[in-house]
Length: 244
Image 1: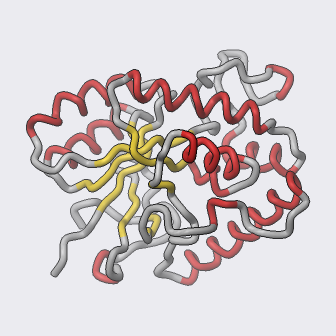
Image 2: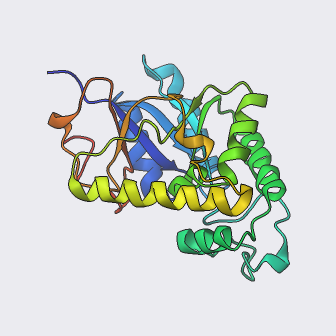
Image 3: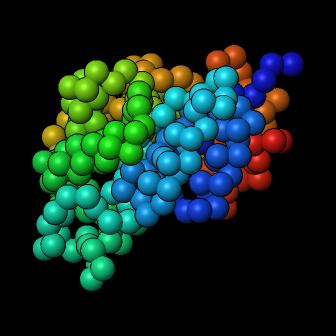
């Protein structure tokens, strides 16, 4: 039986998530990790992770988990966009981002500035970023998909989570993926007048993956070269634990 290949999302989001991911790193169960560099506990996570490198034989790769969903932006996000609360935090959440995109209220230039800042913050924390994805899959939607593609090309980042590679194991997962695909087409039409999928849906730029936050995942049903993307320490995974 082959070993289950795991990727952990949301590093830096909370002390509980940090602890759960770091324990898996120590046990050498993770192939890769995505870090939210603007999260409150990102620096704490990076410090602990950097101390672990000499102690493990197979260090996981580190991705940037680009985030415009929650936490404080690292750039001056336009106050009149109604996307920042009185404490300076993103507060609109997933549905708020989608509504803003459908109304064409998110400026790609602002997104790019924030992406630049989050990447720089990650590198300042001593993290070697080799890949990129996004918190709650925002880079699957236009114009964020185009911003991420351009950024990755300029920084020679080859590993990008591509939704061309997203797999499902259940009917509910397949339905969610189909609806998300449709939403992505709508955002592409909204911003660019093109009736097609954004660039995050094209090409094999990372590896085939399944999402434990979307459906119940069985490791025994994994196909060759598939990776499980999970969220250790959080409550979003549907019955999956990295040791299962």
